[in-house]
Length: 358
Image (cartoon, rainbow, N blue to C red):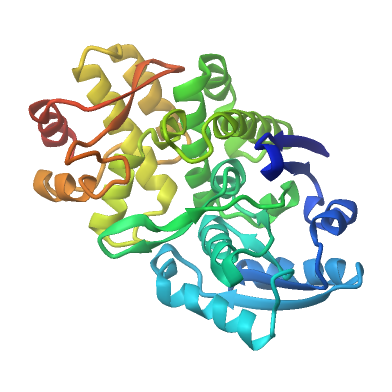
């Protein structure tokens, strides 16, 4: 197994990556300080892994409860979140109870937010089971739920004690979920590491075939990039915003279509193409680089064209983005593959991009 550290001073924590990582007893024993654990999972992942994980934790002389949520982005809301609090209170969980998030990004975000809020903060552990959650949402402490008017608008920055990234979860990961995770992998290369982006281009077929060596390298490098950015800007006051490349468009697509119609990664895939096209229209990115980005996103099985929501609808949704400042939308754009910029853009250029592409 390989261990990376997210360096955040007293809130620092390890990311353990490898086969069988979710059953790493030594790491679990160190991270679980109390006597009680609540595993939060969903009705797809739970039947596959929850009982075995519970058995591992019980072998550490801990009491384990399992709370299962319905699957899907459409359930990432305050109503579903409240069922986690119900479970914690029904089991008389105290402030030393550890919440374990077993699932993808939706589970991680909701379980993490519950941990941040219950008794004003209890420990939690991330065990991400999708590629998207392994390379993105499980790293960095962003937690929260959606509101009908905007994605992830209610939440908190709250770091886990431990992240266990188990490569064995790929055995049961549907191909559509693998593609969705690749959106975040591609994003890391596009904004931060041109050499990594080129490696992805050269190895995309092997990655999509679940080649273990290539998948491991992609996960490790993406986690290294995100951990580095988070260590420099934990609460997104500046640099961390670059991790939202493609997300301003992507979140608008998700909200505009209705949560769960497209997977998050699918919306981000189309969003990155829009962001690349916008960068090109501003004279910051060559047409060849736009083509490279579009080609890699397509090779990962992701949409390269957004749904036809209409310019005004997209504009309205983007104005609800968390990076909006005084009514001005701040975009993460590219000055070349591997080089990012955070900026506002002229309204006419944005509308022209949306008119052409969306």
